[in-house]
Length: 462
Image (cartoon, rainbow, N blue to C red):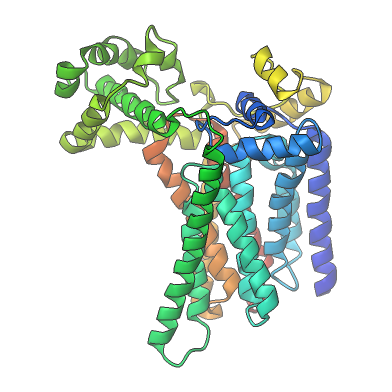
């Protein structure tokens, strides 16, 4: 198959996948979080429990077309366009890559998930597209105009990713490292000059992403409701960890709480530890006084949490390992949400504020039935995609000495490592096991493996 025809075939399969996803998901799936964010976007007043960029974007999409369907349309375009851009780095993608791409197009975590309105999907798609733009910037480095446009697009997309999740700054860190590696290979008077120049490029890129993140966050928080949600997030994590530690060791001493917050200690021992589950903290809020105790006033819970880490590190690690493993494996027996379809009708007031009506029609039921067929199988498993990513990164490492430091390989490796680091970060921050949280791991694995399979071992991919 000629090079141009091969790329056209790849574009055709991916375009069919994009159209199919839009068709089966129209006009998008809205879980409770998305409805809440859409309502905030329509009102122009944000709550920062979730990153407010989602609410702002949904409000903007809703003003352009009621129902925020444009959000799904454009967010999905980032994934499908980013995947094609990464494969098209190869002038003559190997025909076998078409079979792999076709498999991804019918995977439920693509076909159905790309129609779900979630910050996790926005984050993952923006990060993937950002890495793709960076790879093309490296490939077209000698063209200043095209390089500049692609780098600007990459920085904008990676800034969007950083804004979309509390731990969203991980991809920009790895992208900056990839940029440094690309610049390091460019000619310079001396090795020292190359190193200094690479460091400057990476530092400037990170500074631009961080600056954009800070400015956008401040602009959005100027319209926030003033609730200290970041601090509340941390308090929930701390109380949740303490409950898990007491569950594993009922004799664990909590001296700080005993002295300054005895009611919280009693809650942890008498209620939270008994009902604790590694699958998430939501059920603890439903306990008597749970809503108050999970976000306690003062600093005592945080001090006791730090004391747990310092004095009982092994117990803390055991507690967090159970939570992280449940987040990674999302076992059905733990009640981890896996499939999201339709428009949630749990809160009529939020529905009205979002301008939507509850929905679970025949097409939504088809989507759910289709996705359900894959539950328990490899195409609906973070462990499977994580293993594929390790295989892809290993393949890149094996080829590295023979094929050299092509920008496409550098960026592909950086994206894969970013996905693994992002997944690892949930060891510290996870308080739920929803499948959506590690969505970036899945699509990064798809993109990295497809890029590896599409490239020809005997060429540098140019």
